[in-house]
Image (spheres, rainbow, N blue to C red):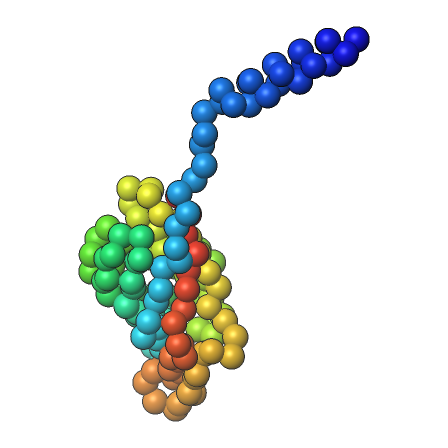
Length: 147
């Protein structure tokens, strides 16, 4: 009986050792600086502009990104950054510039991640002019990415 238990344990251990190792490479978060959002509702359709500087420690690439999203537009629309190897989109749209989801991806599929931009780090000012609201992120905004 002990022989069968030992043989079974050894067989299981051998199978585990022989299995290929498929660990993912750990990716560091992408940093967004100078994150800004402005809301324009004076002329239909209402729209939001978003801009930031992207720094990717995984590729050592830095690029500028900006987009204009119209309220009611598709959340699947992707916007190229200055370096077209990065794209941004807003999967849930932007209905409140103080609370929205930012998704960063690479068209080759090597990185993708999203993060919700909300909270006390937004410093916003509402105005009677154009734009009607301007917000700036206080500090560095991080987007965790994975393959």
